[in-house]
Length: 164
Image (cartoon, rainbow, N blue to C red; front, side, top):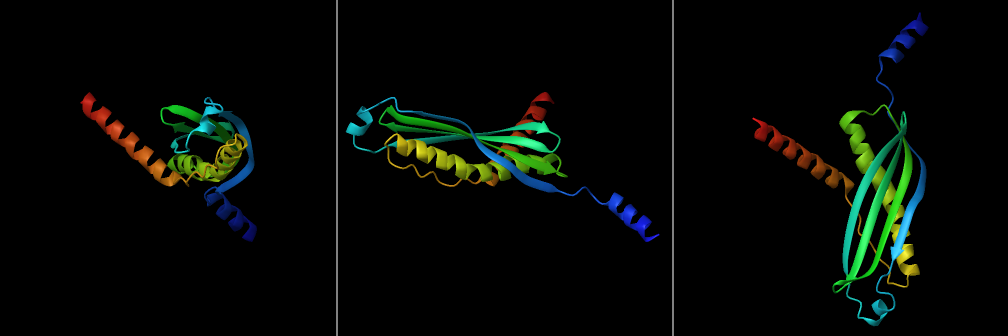
């Protein structure tokens, strides 16, 4: 009798949430110094532009590949001193998480884990290119996700208003 009650209780429970990092790997790394030696002849007062993007690919049920692409362009005046791009990826097990909560995990938690690895890969490439170390500031992926959700909601409301 006790076993029957325990089985019923187990069946009525919500699926257990699970999140685990399986692997982190460097998917792509590119470094270009189009100015060549001319970059070293000038006073070092760069302007830095940083772009980032995330992409999620469902590999199989409960297994997702998340790729964080980080591109940094450093200019001296109007000319590009160097450009470095890294695609840092990871395989993550995510189970028992659905809908908006799944989207948030894949777009905030996973990139937050990948970012330090991407930052290190960029810094290594830059210093091997004989440029000063590039200390990228932390990124608040939760704030970026909230902003993207709010923007998508505003665009959807705008589309509905223009249809009516």
